Length: 99
Image (tube, rainbow, N blue to C red; front, side, top):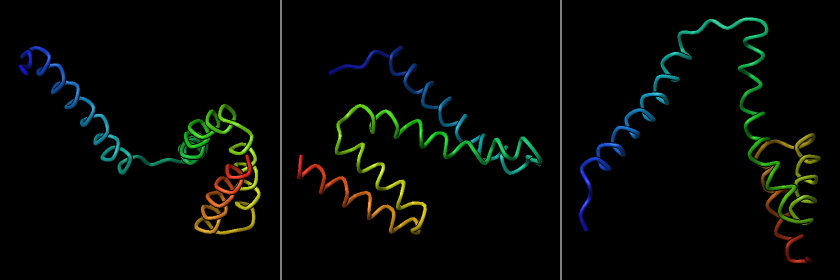
């Protein structure tokens, strides 16, 4: 199998640019002094991304996953993180077994 030099150069270039954009975020985030609305926006980003990743799976797969997500959301209001994860895993396994 041979690799075209132009293809290899494109892959390596894209990898380098991807790595630089990810690592630059770490360096820049430490230097930012966030206050007020900007701090609130940065604090809201991780839950928003997590919701954007989970919501399509919850709504597009089937009723066991949707019900397990609701059970997990309710557990998250009362339990610590590790217990919530355990409740979510057990709920999805049990509901898939029933379905």
